[in-house]
Image 1 (cartoon, rainbow, N blue to C red):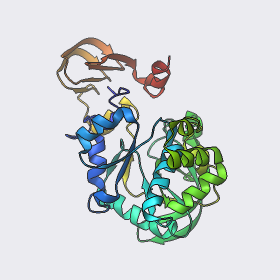
Image 2 (cartoon, helix red, strand yellow; image 1 turned 30 degrees about the horizontal axis):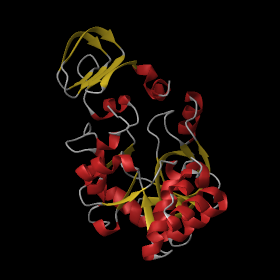
Image 3 (cartoon, rainbow, N blue to C red; image 1 turned 180 degrees about the vertical axis):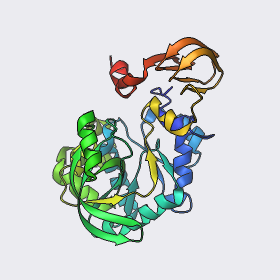
Image 4 (cartoon, one colour; image 1 turned 45 degrees about the horizontal axis):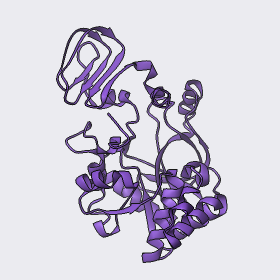
Length: 319
């Protein structure tokens, strides 16, 4: 379903509106439209306008991962509002509930952002998921009601199943949500310190608008570029439900299965089906005699995958 010209944030699988619209709605009342920015590549300009209307956009001339995107946003906002502005950075394709708990966590982070911390939001793991990154929790910093903040000790990207089980049992690790908060001045200083090529390349682009500078920026995530190296890391323990719905298995967490443990969405009919996920957006799908499969049909094509291979689907897409 997710395609280069229609990534998953534009899909309305989980609810009546795309994930992008859900993300924007979640922030309304907390952050006015004049202070909300979508960082997008040129190829998504048209579809973003279609779904996001008059939201502010920052165009990155080439996709160079999250370190460059955040640096570009920070430098752009610095020109308008200075170093003390607080940035809340979040992907536009996550599911988060309830909204009230999420907004309270963002507000709680302001105390740490103003004191020079880089805040990440850790989610108590509900299962030993190998598709998520994990953060080791250090000593407590501050508590306010049900919200807690800790020093962050270490990041681990997508561990093995056995290591993920150990992390969950230890209760010393949280899922890395990929949501961050920091002041403009702090994150720019950290990017400049830990990945100067990113900082200088993006700064040259902002100053000249010559794409060649941005194209030379290293393709690196903010996690690897800054968060794993920073001594300013603070973890706010999220007391909200979060899912990055990065796999078709996420449907099992949000839709009720039938008596044979199947999830069937769209124009689907079948016989002798067990423990399978079948999703179709427009094309009728008829299935007979399968077990443990994921089948997805769309105008772009058809996907058939064993459920236990779903977390590794990127290997197929990159083949």
